[in-house]
Image (cartoon, rainbow, N blue to C red; front, side):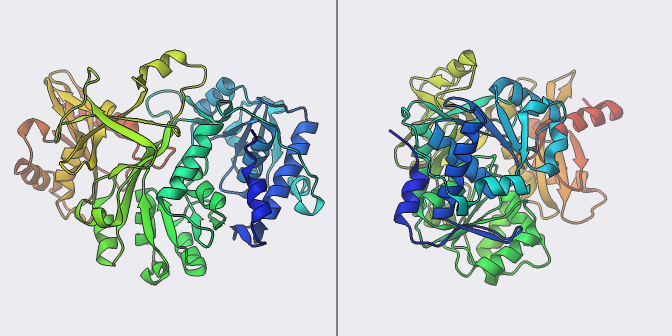
Length: 503
């Protein structure tokens, strides 16, 4: 079977804008996208790339992302998007582990590839040479190869928050199943438009946002690099039907000087995923008549759960229920399903779930139990069957033998109006093993904020959960996937604890 679905889309669609790149002033139809991929497939073949080889791209949101993806599907080549926000050491570990044969790159990010063998750095995607290779006016038809549904289609590496990045494998079946599931879940149609601001090296940006719309025949507007003010301008110009973004991106739009709720007049829904919701942002949008809906997934299982618009109004922190063709359970440490209201690890099963990690059979074995993938997220289920994420299992703080969920402490802190955002982490304690600390971004300057917050949380949570150390920050540091960088915050906390002699 061949998975050359962009050709089918081109055959069925009228000539219309499929991808718009405002930064470059270009528009590409579905026929153009198919022709560009055909041309690139011929070029790759001429360069000696063959079925099963890994070909990478190191670039922001650009039509080249889709050129290479669709060319790879035509050839049976393994598509590798590389996260350009990672540290050089992490990037090199991906290059070495994946066995990539060739890397297309954006010149702006080439410096981050320092140390990469010259023979792998193939071409700048913004160069005239690349444009000429893909030029749809010189269409050279390519006959797609037949592949098996279990064959490797893509590698996507984790963000490396708990060690070096791991290569998540996508078969043709798992990759395409997710795209179809997302399109059905979000009711994506060919007359819709969205703006893609989330990086396309991330499953939220590529698998859950861009590709479902392209498969459905809609129009995708590229936002090369996220910027709240720029996105507000694009909203004004293109009036999209929906957005799917990380919570911090919605915040970035709100605080920009040019935010205008009138730009949302066509919006049917707003999805947020990739990290924990920001309650203040949710409340702000709700006050303007728009509900932020929580979707849930991870690199290993891109979209598995989503809340509904109605349910999001009454249960704004819930991720809802499993989408079609996905099963979920909450399991204890022995693999037994927990009851209503009890905390367990969320486990999911479906065709869109990865078969495992590249070159890591032992790691793969650890994350599967009876056919279910263990997400590493602790969650609980209410009497209606709605799921609420409680915390990452690895973020659990154990202080003096007691378990502390950072999310519970963060929620208590965030209820106070002087707190704009709060991140709770454990720091090393000779007395308790770990102690609780909180990084705070204040909504307004407050000299004695520690005393105020200490009194506030003592009325809401148990004594052993109360932060023993606070760190005021102007902004919460973010990692390569725009999530709070808890490792960096933890490092800063340990430094402060040593300086102040706090246990």
